[in-house]
Amino acid sequence: MSKSGGINIHGKNMEESSTTTTIPVAATLSRYESQKRRDWNTFGQYLNNMRPPVPLSQCNSNHVLDFLRYLDQFGKTKVHLQGCMFYGQPEPPAPCTCPLKQAWGSLDALIGRLRAAYEENGGSPDTNPFASGSIRVYLREVRECQTKARAWYTLQEEKESHEC
Image (cartoon, rainbow, N blue to C red; front, side, top):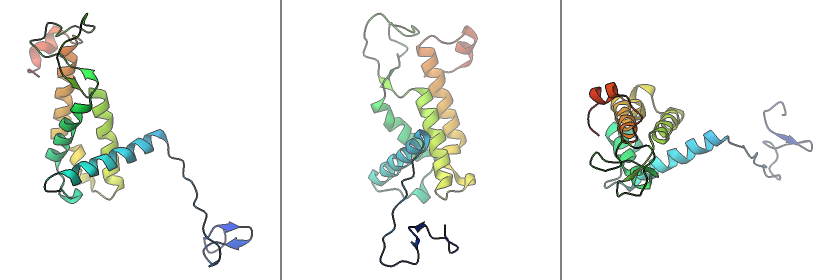
């Protein structure tokens, strides 16, 4: 670096030289940072595609919940419904017509990345729609529902939790 803060390549200060173009430094992002950026862009596109489009400044937890429900159509986790003969079986012996949904762990990680991205992009922690109580409740309900559908729960949890 030169004293003025420009990048010095072959003795030329890149900020002061009008004849030399700046060589962009390729920033290698971690897998997490790449995913966070991709998730943020996907959520922004989702808001833009709404009718009418929703500016990020007006986004609230209901938009986030709608986005999470929208993502279910791309899920790969079979979630057996209560009437399914395989409900409660972790490894069913045959296929069924129960829906595929996003796995709870994937949604939980997604919300974590979006929560961080919101604040990194200028959003206030106080108004972060990804950090709202309704999102935590939704994630808890998804986890409980998926757990029950796969029989990874105790009898006590079954009594305490409500239906999916």
